[in-house]
Structures are given as C-alpha cells and as structure tokens.
Image 1 (cartoon, rainbow, N blue to C red):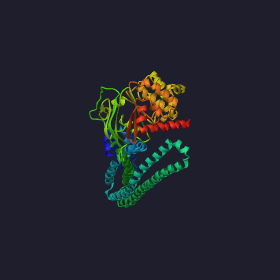
Image 2 (image 1 turned 135 degrees about the vertical axis):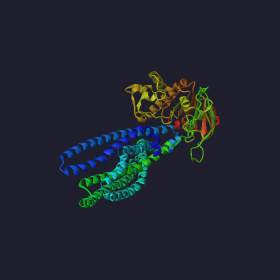
Image 3 (image 1 turned 90 degrees about the horizontal axis):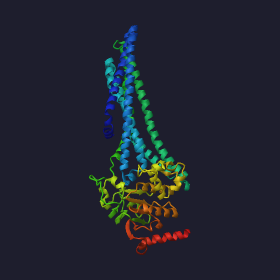
Image 4 (image 1 turned 90 degrees about the vertical axis):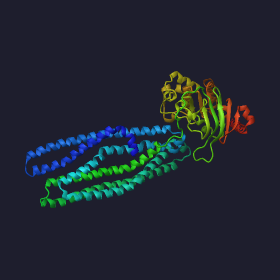
Length: 577
C-alpha cells in the first residue's frame, strides 16, 4: 500500500501539506477552547465578572470560527487529493490490463479485474480521504491533549494512561480478528461478481435448459457467503464502538470522582476539572479516530495487495526495446517452425507450423474443433507469442515490430464479434476514426450490411447496445467485417467470421469481398468447406500440426483428413436437403 501511496499520491503533495497545515491549525484551536472555558468558569462565573465572560466568550467564538474554517479547508484538500489518487490508480490498472495478452487476461479473469478497479480502489481511496479528514488530526490531538491535561493537573495523569492502555488493548484484539475477514470478504466479492457475470452473459442458455432454480441456488450460495462474512466483520465493528464509548464514559466518571477529592483539598479548581474532562474526551476521541483508521487499514491493505498483483504483472507479450517502425514489403505473413503451448499444458496446441501468405492471395485454415486454428491466427497480432519458431510480417519477426505498426497493418474480425455501446458509425470508425460516411456505407455494402443498416431508424447513427445485443448474430458478424474493411489494411484475418451467415449471404459477401482484398494477404479460419474451397491455399490442421497444404482439388486427393471433412459436410447437407 505504501508503494501505491509513494507513486500515486506524490503528485498531490502540495494538497496533502495543506491538509496537514490546516489540521494542525484546527487542532490548536480545539485544544485552546477548553482552557478558555476553564478561565470563564474560574475567572468569570465564580467571581461574577461579566466583562471577563464577554471578553473570553468573544475569543472562544473567534477560535471556533478558525477551527471550523480549517476543518472545512482540510476536508476540501483531502477530498481533492483522495479522489485524484483514486482516478490515477484506476487509470493505471486499466492501462496495465490493456497491455495484457490473452494469457494474463485468462489468468486473472474479467470479474476480478473489474472488482480490483472499482471496489478495491475505493477501499484505498476512502482510507486516504478518512486519513486526511480525521486521522491526520488524531496524533496531534492526542499529544496536544496530553500536554494540556498535564498543564491543568498532573495529579490525574495516571487516569489517562490507564484509559489509553485499556482502549488500545480492546482495539488491538478486535482489529487482529478483522484483518483475515477483510481478505476473505474481497475474495467473496470476486466470486459473487463472477457468478453474476456468468449468469447474465449466459441467460439464454440458462432459460433454454430450464436451469433457473439451480442458478438461483448458486447465486444464493455466493450471496450468503459474502453476507455471512460481512456480518462477522460487522459484529466486531459493532463491538468496537460501544467498547470505546464505555471506556470514555468510565474514564470521565473516574476523573470526576478523583477530581472532586482534589477540589475539596484545594489542589484543583472547578474550571480546571471541566477543562481536564474536555481534554480527556479529546484524547480518547483521537484514539477512536485512530480506531477508524485501524478498521479501514486492514481491508485497504488487502485491496492494495490485490491491486499490486495487477500492476506488478507484466504482459507475456513484450515490446522490443528497439522496435522496427518501417517496413519495406507489404502484406506478407510467414510461419517458420512455429509451436505454441499454454502455460502448464501437457502438450503444445501447435507444433512445427510452417507456411507463408503472400499479398494478393487468400489462405484458409480448416480442421476439427480444438485443432488450434484460432490460436494460430492469434499469433499474428500477438494476442499470444509463439513458444518456439517465428511469426513474421513483411519479413520481420512480429516480436521485433512496433505494436502500432503491426496492428496498423492488420484488420481482425474475431470469432466472437463484439460491438460497443454507441452507434453503427462509432463502431465502424473504431478502425479508422477519420473515415467518411461514404467509406462507411461502402464497407457496409461489401459486408452485405447496407440493407439492414438503412432500415434502421437513424441509419449510421442508429444506436448499438453493449455487445451488440440489439442486432442478430449474423448482423453483428457483418458489422464486424465492415469495421475491418473501413481500415483497408494490408492483412485481413477472418476468424470463423462467416459462421452465422446463411449460404446465399456468405456467397454474396465473398464475391463482393474479393475485389476489395485483391492486393492484401487474407487468412480465413473456417468450419465450412463451402466458405474456403476457392482459397488459393488451404492449410489443414489436425491436433495442432499441419497435415496438408494445397488447393481444394489437390487436398481431396492427397489429404485424408481434408477429404473426410468434405465428405462429412456434403453428406450432412444432403441429409438436410
């Protein structure tokens, strides 16, 4: 946590110094008020001197105004610094998450990254805010209160020592019990978010298989686990405050009891006893304010550890220290003895892959489910890095290329097309922000999406909901293809991007697509033979290895695996007919 403070609070040092200065001023004012009150009682009320009462009363009013103004200023500076700290920390987590490869994203998972960027940051942010508003003043108030109380009457000082020791012991026991519970609570917040996210994302599947009762039970279990932990924490917190007030009130009774004997002996005046009571309350109040920090600190420290896990995790896809920023050739992709294995896997997903994609040609990859087709495609934009071998773009290893240069040459249509909240136009312009409306309509025509976009109420300005849930699966795929076409890249990567299209739309799209990509290198991952049979080169994968390379006609004769795929699909279509 201190590392986070050192890095992300340093820019706001002037604001924090302002907090300390203002808290010091308001503490001095607060400590001065009981002495003034004692003087009013002893020098004014006891002697019947009205002038002294008015004079000291005016000074008390002025000191109170100073105290209130300083408190307001300290709260303002503290709020500014803590909110800015939270903003910067959230930005740092978001930036680090954006740098992650698929490996790190799969390792953390979306639910815990969301929790760490919201709930965990909020815990530390609140600690900073409460420290600025309350905790900075606590040690000043405690030390100042002890000094002023001893100044009034050293004979009662042992009561302060006893009260602080008893209160500190109670607080220490309770806080030591809460620390592991806070850690458990954060993990259960993660679990609840994960279950909720899965159920919302898979709502159609749940309904289709009538799994609502089981999913209700699963959510109820996660919810109860979090609730039970929160109740255990709450019970200890509720024990804490009554204990603090019990010690404070018992201490006040003891001061009055023993103070009465000292007044009777002439060693103490009534006003001094009143001031001593006020200082004792301030001392114990400062202990209570420190208690609030001790209650928040364990949970904040747990949250800081979880945030540091993200910030200290480096992407497995590392940018070269001296990246290549200029390329002489255009649109050529090569795989040279490429293998890839997921961490901890017993065997590689891909092994010994070697082939090239030249500009102006279309290369298709086909194979059974789990053969490694999408993984192979993802090596080109460096969503993963090859375990061994080299993936090259325009003759340069992708690991040596500047990421912006690499991504600027690629148009990727992922297997699961994702649309963002906004409009049709804003989604298409993700690939080219300065694209004109004519360029957008041209891309939509090629992607066979012009008709349904034109039929929308506002055309290009029609709203798209999160994930594109207000359009069909086929429409999402066509919009994703149009988004890649707007950029007009030198390398097109289609990851099973025609699976949701009917046969006629698929054929029309491929026919319109051919002249658009005639100068580019095109790599298509597909399940249907009809989609890729006209490709210049077809690469057949089986269990992560290349078992055939050639044209459709050549592979039917030379590759049993491909012949079996073709045979099964044609038989399936005949049965369907």
